Image (cartoon, rainbow, N blue to C red; front, side, top):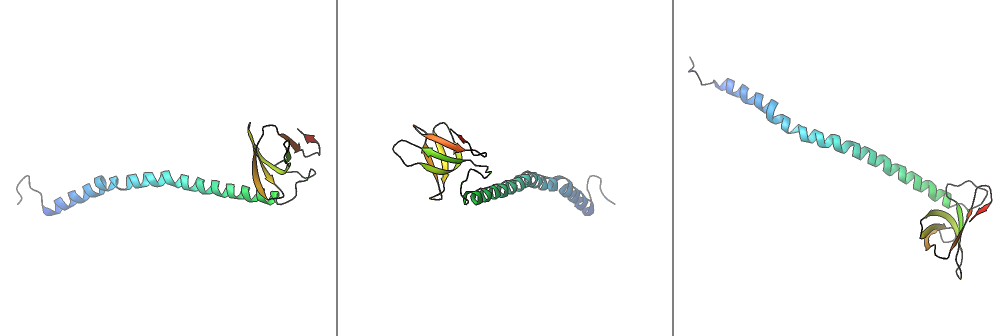
Length: 132
């Protein structure tokens, strides 16, 4: 016969096991699952974006290895940068801003960044007409 208020060792074990599996155990996987589900999309989309960027760069480099002709249809325009008292730069127009221009030069196979001050850019369009 048991005295009221005291529990048997078996009931204590069941009570401790129930608290362990329902209370404290839920505190451990909760943050782990939260971090996993938070990091998983970041890792997936990060890898997709990295692969896309690498493929675009490889495609651009392949286009840059071919000569810049007016008759070809490129994503990057063929450009000639003319400055007074300097040699002109011919190649693919990479990007430009209000002050600078970046051109992939065909001769040296390098990107040249130059100021637009007192410079003229001649872009060769797809239909063969020049645009200033």
